[in-house]
Amino acid sequence: MMRPKTCRHTFRATLLLSLATPAFAFDWDDLPPAVIPTLAATASAVEGFAPAGWIVEAKATGDLDGDGRPDAAFVLHGTDPKLVIDNSGGIGGDQIDTNPRILGVALATKDGFRLAVQNATLIPRRTQPNIDDAFSPEDGLSISRGSVRVAISLFANAGGWGMSNIDFTFRLIDGTLRLIGYDRTDTQRNSGETETVSINYPSGRMSDAKGRIDDDKETKVWRKAPASQGPTVDQIGDGIEFDPTK
Image (cartoon, rainbow, N blue to C red):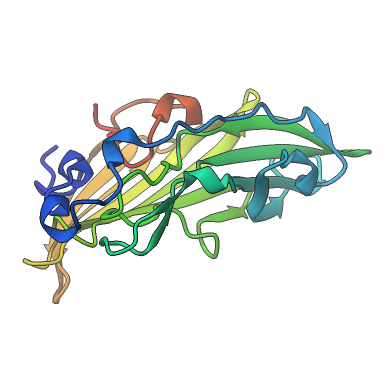
């Protein structure tokens, strides 16, 4: 499927950084590595899954395994000060937090929670100052009707006109999160062109709609979903780079 040229990998480029930042700016090609810890197997509360140096940034509750008890999905965010980069005088802000995130799912037990899923790739780490943070704690995580929804976005404050909003809907199947719904809207801010791809894996259907932000009309094409079932959260990898049609 064709995408707007600036909506994916070209966003990762630092097209305008050399012009917009001073010569003494941080070398973003030499970003310190981030260590992903293994979470505890059980905890009395969701906060108990956060290791030292991590915080619970977002949390949602709801029954995910059909036993009538409130399970939990959560996002942990690292707080390592070495990964908060001094970007004084550069684009994107004076400080850029490059700490990674972990998406977790914990099932309710009589004593608290049992960890079912740990994933540190779906929500990408911020690694460039001209690319905004992909995750919003306010509306990036929710549980509804037994499914977990994770929303991320792609927005370049310099270096490109495209932006993307992506929703992943997962269901807990065979002990892991498996994708059942995918929605991505790519928008070209300069031309106003939009493209929305929606996939419903259980129904086996997907749509591709093209339009403009200044016009309610759109052209929508329906076709068969690219697979009989969606990938697991670990198979997706980086949620921004994921292309379900390949």
